[in-house]
Amino acid sequence: MMGRLLTPPVLGLRENRRQFSLLVLVNAFVGSMVGLERVVLPLLAEHEFGIASKSAVLSFVATFGVVKALTNLAAGRLSDGVGRKPILVAGWIVALPVPLLIMWAPTWGWVVFANALLGVNQGLTWSTTVVMKIDLVGSRRRGLAMGLNEFAGYLGVALSALASGWIASRYGLRPEPFYLGIAFAAAGLALSVLFVRDTTAHMKVEAGESAVSGIAAQESSATAARSVG
Image (cartoon, rainbow, N blue to C red; front, side):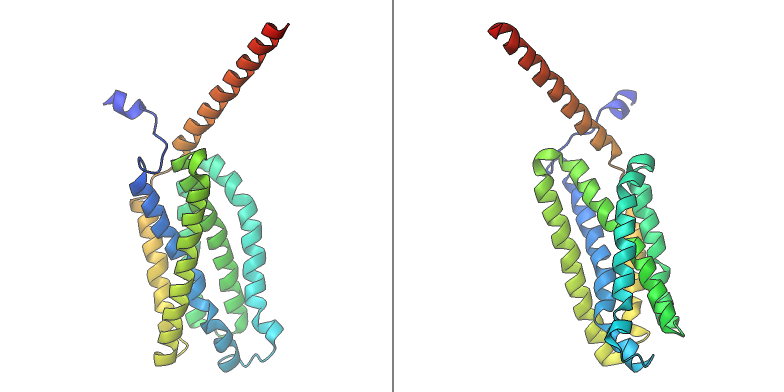
């Protein structure tokens, strides 16, 4: 039992396909949280809050972008310090009140605040799923890991925008389209808590391999220099 626990994790897409696929699905839910409101919120601003100015309407996009950028800066350092999974779970916890705030918003300021929380959610979850995929597959498949992560995320954005727009046209701007958001956040949190495993150990394996490769390269250069001398 102890020997099995001490066995270091193996890097590679095939070796970690289940966790990798799970993280792809999680990031699809991350993207879905964004797509949910991209169609509905501009209409909500105009028809329910009487906001005609395009700059005022787009304030939710600006707030989202600034907060996400700042959160992205912190996500990597935090995940190195406390682990990948806690940051992923924290991002989903922040997302839980977002659809509720929009559903119940009495003023546009509530919607802007909800988008600030969504920016935190995206900065933590999207960034962390990228990092975790790279941890699993190692340096040779980083490009593929990032590509699949982006594909899943933006596919979620597109499908969620399509679904929320259809629901809004059929049932109204609030609250029906945002029931999807509750489902997305709950699903993302449940998958992250119950099934996603932390990948910090995989990162350490890759770091160890890189260190060994660097030492070997230095020794080889030193040997070559002595031979020339």
